[in-house]
Length: 307
Ligand SMILES: O=P(O)(O)OC[C@H]1O[C@H](O)[C@H](O)[C@@H](O)[C@@H]1O
Picture (tube, rainbow, N blue to C red):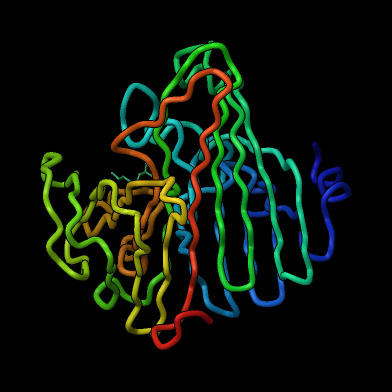
C-alpha cells in the first residue's frame, strides 16, 4: 500500500502515518500526555515520550533502510535470539509489517495499533524451512501513563516449530554512571562476556561499569526498575502475566560502541538495553497454537509511584 493509501485508511485524530527517516513509513500515535513513533520496517518503536521526557533511546547514527535493523528503539527479536542457524536475531526486526487495525478510546486516553507479519519467501529463506508458517501480531497500547506491548505468534502451518523472542528495548538515560537496575537479585544469569558462565546475581542494584551482556533467567515474577538518579526518574518494567520470562541487560561499553558503524562512539553513556523475552527456553508451537507475550513499560519519577 502506498503512503497515501495508508494515510487515507488509518489517519485520525490520534494516529498519523508519515514518511520517516530514509523515506520509510512511520506511524505516530498521540494521546493527551504521551506520544510514540513506530516504523513499519521491523515494527520498531523508535520514540516514546511522556510529556517532554524521552523514554526510549534511538541512535543518531542508525541507518533507516529496508531489511536493515534500526539501531535503538524496541527492535523485535524473533524467531532466534543472537547468532545461530539463522541470521543474528532472526527476521522480525528487518521485514515490513502491515497495519492490521487501530483502536482509539478517547475517554480512557488509549491509542492502540496492531501490526502483523506472516511467512514470506524471505522469512522461509532465513528459517531454511519452507514449511514454517506463522502469523505474528505486535500490539502497541499507548495509555496515559504506560505502554503495553503484546507479541503474539500463531503457528498457521502443519509443522511444529520453536522460537525465541525478545523486545530489545533501548532506554534513554542521562548517564550510565548514574543509573541502575533493581529487582534481579537472587536470579541466575548467563554471562555472554564471560564464556556463557552461569552466575547468581548478588547485587540489590546493578550498576554498569564495563561491557555487559547478560541473560537473566526466569526472573520476571516481580517488576524491575530502571532508576536514573540525574533526572530523578525511573521506569517500572513488567511482564504482568509472566509470559516473557527472561531479561537481557546489555550495554556495549567503549570498544564495542566504537566497532558498531550504526552507533555513536559515546552513545553507550546514554543508553541501556533491558530486553524482556523468552530466550533460555524456546517456546514450542504445535500447528494451530498461539503464544502471547506481554510487557509493560511505566515511566515514573523517583518520588512518585506513577506520573
Ligand atoms: O548488534 P545487534 O545484532 O543489534 O545485537 C545487539 C546485542 O543484542 C543483545 O543484547 C545481545 O545479547 C548482544 O549480544 C548483542 O550484541
